[in-house]
Image (tube, rainbow, N blue to C red; front, side, top):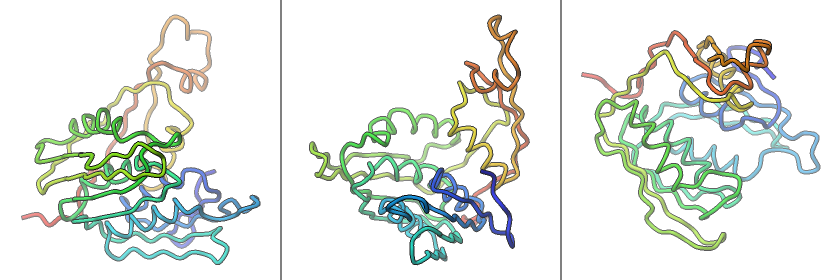
Length: 251
């Protein structure tokens, strides 16, 4: 469901895409309010791992303001300035460390100080991507956007074998990181999650993508909407907003 704008606050309903909304809120500096969080469930409100994520965001920022309703079915999130620095965080065992690690990878390049984060959490989770996959796939992709590789590192300090044991991870991002981007991308099939992310990008940053299906002979009889959602390759173009690290002082 699209956001409703109330007094310059983006208002959403429901628990879906909770991480997306908090991540983009933190990067854009825009306040967000999420209502009716599992209000129809037998156990309504935020889950422990979602509250834990808010605590992590509070640690890497300065001036973040959070207001929770008594029932936990509504949260107001006003992000502060991304600070970074030395952070140690015990992740909720309901989710894997990857749930939190993906957020730090997105926020790290835009922190005022180098981000040195130690995350402690469960070894494996069927719900989240493993740290080994993040290290093998996400880091190389992030390096493509960094002009100078100045110490980006993800290290497994201690690994547990059972679900109740803990792993400890160290992620480092040193001082001088410069990002560059292209306004043209080619991606694979668009999932529902990706489509929602594009909608959120428009709401938080005003960025709109033009989607162009890379047609094949088998696609000639399909409608445009069907092709966008089922195409093997989609070309995406946009006009960027010139986003920079506003937290870091420049000389």
